[in-house]
Image (cartoon, rainbow, N blue to C red):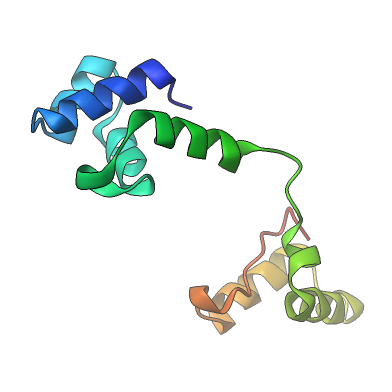
Length: 112
């Protein structure tokens, strides 16, 4: 996870009009790390270091509710496949092939 100091450097670099690659070079990070960080927290125009740091800590907070607890439809589908003696890996693969990502019917075999 990026530190607040790194996020402040990203913010200064964006204000100066620097590329993600240039900012990443100064931080010793991959350009994709900087790109994801900026995209996750408002984009080039709205990125603010303090707000991004606060948001990152909020997102990292544990414990998180399990996907199977949040979605009764997903839970019932997985339970049905388990009753049919499917393996967790088979269920996860079938869900990925059968449903679109925006349907919310994805869970990893580790979660199952």
